[in-house]
Length: 273
Image 1 (tube, rainbow, N blue to C red):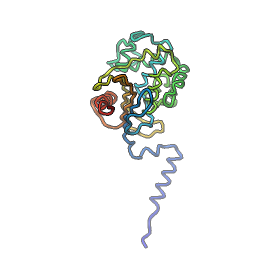
Image 2: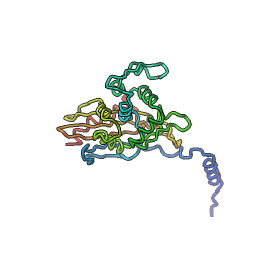
Image 3: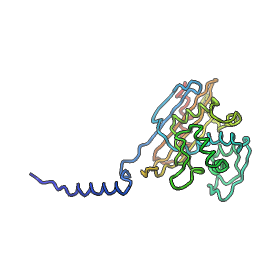
Image 4: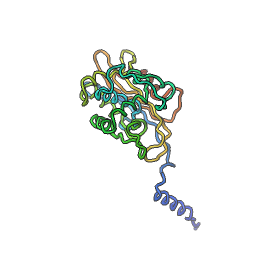
């Protein structure tokens, strides 16, 4: 009978155990992470699911969709006053991309997704008040601690960091917002005005979000990027809330958030009759 040389197997086992004991990311050699897509639409009043397709209960970074709850926080805390107040000037220390190097007010902030304006709101809030609002909102995992060891929760927790939310949680948050059941002032609820679009007979208000996922907290290499489009739409006196999420490795000339928005606006008239 042919003898099997077990030495390569023993050697591989020893290497695996050493890697495990030393804390190396053993899973880094695993298969690529899967693409994720979700389209979720609920009746805003009843909460009835009108359309659901894909993986909708997995949490990801909210990216710029976090501007929706952050608007509520800003108006409730008195940092934001109205659609055009305050208007903050760009400062070199913000280190923003060229298109965001300009004076920005709340309307421009929402429309152009200006990150430095978000960070100025949270900076003025301070860590304790910021965390308190997010916790009271029950927003996703409510974790605004930021990247471990970097002390960046106040300025980056919602951008591919500790704060994560699923499409299911996004639409439930939006239902509470429209029903004015969040713990903020009436003024804060009334001031939420998102960019408006048309999809057939539907008037849509929504916010995009785009980010590259990079390295996850458990050190698994993640080369995917994500795109969100979340918000609400109205037609004939009826209101729906929605979340569209795309997570994959595909590259395109259009950022993934606006691409998700374009896909949703195209599809919506055929999804809800």
